[in-house]
Length: 285
Image 1 (tube, one colour):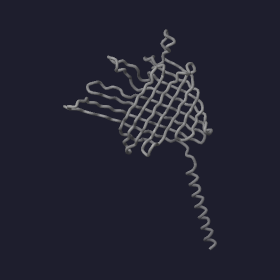
Image 2 (cartoon, rainbow, N blue to C red; image 1 turned 180 degrees about the vertical axis):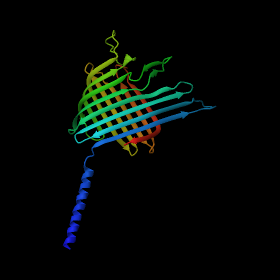
Image 3 (tube, rainbow, N blue to C red; image 1 turned 30 degrees about the vertical axis):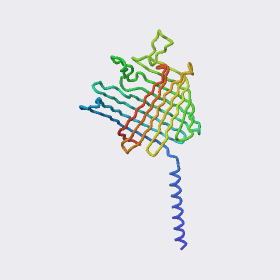
Image 4 (spheres, rainbow, N blue to C red; image 1 turned 135 degrees about the horizontal axis):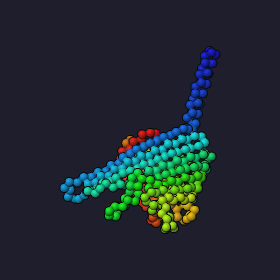
């Protein structure tokens, strides 16, 4: 009997030990790489033949690719993200026109020290193909690949009160690079010189918000502010907000609003919004 009890006791200890180890493993923070790559395509088309109420044939398409590669360790967090959006629209007999074109990359390395953590970051933004001003006849080219290109490097303190929102504030260096379109980089205070590169030193603030509003609705918003030391009253603003509703595994609806203000380009704020229904596929998660 004692031998049986001893065997049962050892078995019970092994079971408890195994359960405790399993719970401890589950409770331990997960470290390492977490990768995500999502691609989507949106398509809209209308055709008319002897339609008494009028209308023009039209075709619009857009491709979106979003990537995120995060290496989360006990003391450090390194997030690399990228965004590619490109699309065209064709109405009637008019030629095809670009509707959206954006390449954006960001890398943020954070050293975890608690609620406030030091960070270093680098971002880059440009476009794929030439852009035109169609309000003029003939059209006038106003941008091209890496023309302009915006690069920003910053370092400072990140504040992360929850998993939903985080914000960072630090010193930043911003470069605007051009080739054939120096209107984005030219200094109006030097009329005798045409600058193709502009370098600004100042302060940068970036706030990221990701919140699940419902089971199938996701809100993602990024607010970026930059102010150089020469004109602190002139703050560059870039606010990008996306509402994503997942209808099924492969179909979703996206509503995107972008607000942009840079007094070096225009004294008025710029606003763009897009509503799209299309196919989406997660290549990696």
